[in-house]
Length: 164
Image: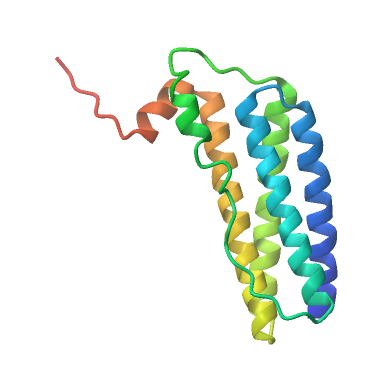
């Protein structure tokens, strides 16, 4: 696959991701989940803009910026520790699908970065690889939180359980 083909494939992937995260935002009832998916829409839209600009031959300087809007989601949820956070089956399924999508994106961008000769294109794919990894980690953390909130808090906070 040529770099031109890789960029065009990446544009399709980012467009699909934007559509997926917009739909997930609409179907998610929990405010923290909505904010996470909305943040991903912003990230994926920025990725798309970078890819379109590099395809046009524009000089770009991609920067790692993802998860800026979602850093406080879990700290916000700590206030609800005594409540059991429940997600609908649709929300859990959206997270599982998003995990798979981000993993595939990571693999694609990593391979594309390794093949790229142009330093700008290589840097863009490296940035996208890093951002897809961060999205995956956030989604994985969200999945763990929803599956077992109590243990999530214990491990996330590095709590020490002492015997009496």
